[in-house]
Length: 67
Image (cartoon, rainbow, N blue to C red; front, side, top):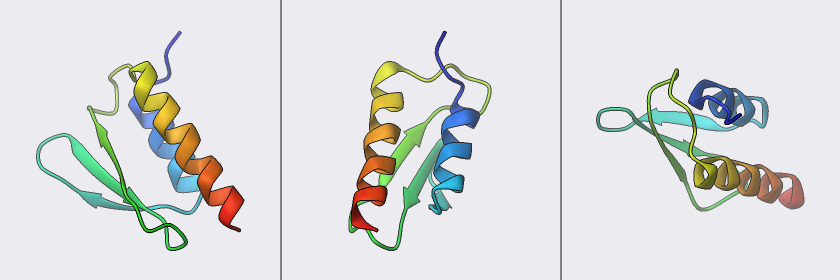
């Protein structure tokens, strides 16, 4: 069963990421120790696509590796 977009956002918040609103249902996520940003598409109740789950997991792993 895929995770919901709200679950991915909660993971990013717990990892210390900052959020900025984008156009429509886009949100941009950044972390002070990483130069790149992550963009999530979808409303909170939508199912996350596998590539979105993988992107969030990789982004959080990169944060942990930098610390």
